[in-house]
Each structure stands twice: as structure tokens, then as C-alpha cells.
Image 1 (cartoon, rainbow, N blue to C red):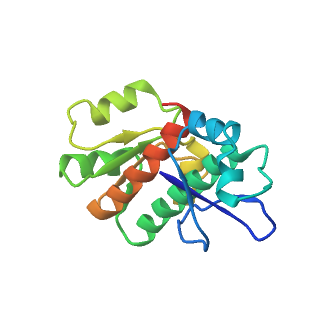
Image 2: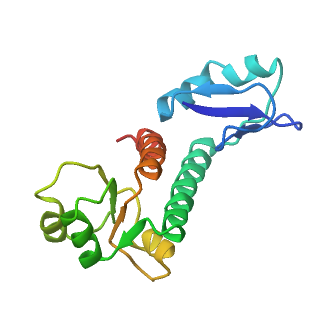
Length: 169
């Protein structure tokens, strides 16, 4: 579920951290759910009056969620539980010390097969570009990342499920 609140200036705001004050409006994280909430005037009813709904609300929600995921991955790097690069990821997988993997959307198929063909013990996500993953590691581009902390991986999986639902996966 994703949470929205009505700001003091009567605008619908996505509450990415689920901590903003006010009565929350909870929706299932899909494009259809957002469209239906607008069509059925759910935001108006919850606010008991007129509200401003940004035209690009779905895009704003998607960007906020993706940014939160990237920030958490960056935090994993700073806390020492992120491994990146083909060889580093390969060693972590061999040591069975991986809880979630990220692969760039445009990664080569043979690289994927070499790294992940013999494992099904952790989820692999490809919802980010090479540049987005590279921004986490301080490099121009990055193709493979893995998180070695189980708690961090659980939080990331929940957020990525929301991203994937909003993107229609």
C-alpha cells in the first residue's frame, strides 16, 4: 500500500516515508488504483472538499519510490553490505552471502547467465539503468550489485514490489 495526505494548501501529496501528519489515504500501488481513486473522487471524499491533484501524480510517486530505493542501496554501500562489479558479485554469490541482487536494465544476457544461472535463493531486480546504479557506487555506470544484509534486503524487496506494480510488472 502507498499513502497520500492532503497538504495545508489542499494538494494531494505522496507520503513516501508514511510519516506525514494528517489522515492518510491508502491505495494499492498500481496505475489502475491511482486512476480509479481520481476517477471515483476518493481524494475529494477523504479531504471532504476540493483538492489539487498533480497531473503527473503517478510519475511523482514512481520517482519518489525509486529514489528511496536508490538511497537505501547507497546506505547499504556506506554500511559495508553492498558488493558491486562482476567479480565481486560472483564471489559473494559463491560464498552464499547474497539476499538481493540488482542488475542494470540493459545488462548483457550472457553476464546474467554467468552470474545467476545456478542460483535461485535471492531475488534479482532490473528496474534501474546502468547510470542509476553507477550513481550509488561513484562510477559512471554499474551493471551488477548485491546486498549482503538480510534486513536491508527485506526492506528493499517491499519497496521494489511497489515500484514494479506502478510500472506494470
